[in-house]
Length: 213
Image (cartoon, rainbow, N blue to C red; front, side, top):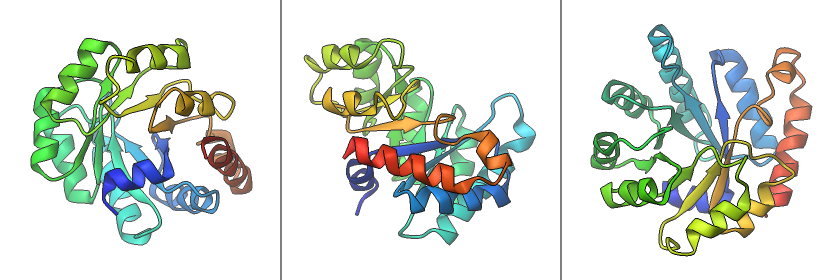
């Protein structure tokens, strides 16, 4: 399958921030048991000293979870981060914003581009620059009605719902026309991770899978 095939098939991208290598592996196992197959490992813009750790986590997922979990890089805002992510094996590049240079370089490298957008103008700009799909972010406060409204004239552009999406409203975003969702702390619960309560993460992951279909 292509990367976009994975996204269309599995629909849910787990967003992981600031996690060390060892718990990242345990988290991946827990998510996989709950039938989550996509993980976005994010860069911390305020801490460049952690970027190599981010790349190491992406590389570990790529090497140890082949054909089980497809890793991507999140909060990619510089060409340096893009290069690090690509070299580590990230298959899709996600940003919080529209940066035409990042989009074009992502596609030039043969990777999937998923920039963050909010308005119809941003959505169109990103897609025209070559984005494979756009993430509508942050979408939670506006809800599925907003997505449905912007998809009416822009139905040709694939969209992901990110920011404030949970197991209670996820199905609404899929019904509104999103190809998938991105979920962060609601699923990747840091308290559960710290306590080693992996079964809770697996159970919640399975609940997400159930509601998105």
